[in-house]
Length: 205
Image 1 (cartoon, one colour):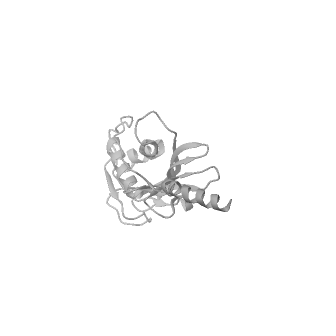
Image 2 (cartoon, one colour; image 1 turned 90 degrees about the vertical axis):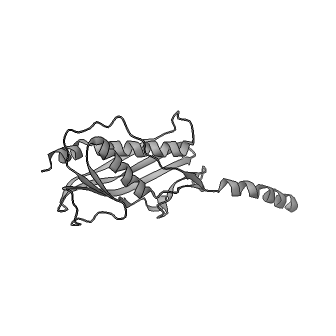
Image 3 (cartoon, one colour; image 1 turned 45 degrees about the vertical axis):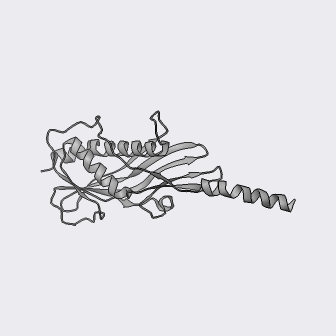
C-alpha cells in the first residue's frame, strides 16, 4: 500500500507543477465610443494611484489576479508584464483625451497635496481592487478604488468610490485578459464621465 501511494504521488507531481505555473495577461485599453466629448474643459494632471489592494496584490505591481480552488487555495498567479499602476495612468489620460480634457500623466509617484503642478486640477487616489480571478463560484474581474480630484493648491474637491465588476463575456480569446481589460475600460469610463468630476472640470476657473 505504501508503495502504491508513493507511485501515485510521483505520477501526480508534473500535473501539480503545471497547474501552479503563472499565467500572463496583456493590459490593453481600447478607445471607448461611449465617452462623449466636452465642449470646454480644464486640464488635469493624473498621478499614479496608490496600491491599496493588501494581500490581493502581494505588493507586486505585476500581479493582477489568480486562480483558486474550492478551499480558497491559490493554484496560479495571474501576472502582467506592464505594471498596472502605470498602465492605469495612461488609460485615464487616454480616456480624458476622448472626453476633450487635456491630461498630463505622472506615472512614477502618487500625489501629495501641495505638490507643484502645471494644471488647475489634479486627479489621484488609491486602488482597492485590480484583479481578474477564477474561483469556485465563477470568474470575475474587479477594478475599484477611491478617486480624488484636487485643485492646484491641493484642496480636495471631490472624493468618491468607483467600482467596475465584469463576468465572462462572449468575446473570443483569453477570458481572464478580456475580463480585466473590460473592467479597466468600465472603470476609466466611470471616472472620466462622472458628473461631479465633470462639473469641476468644466467649471474650474
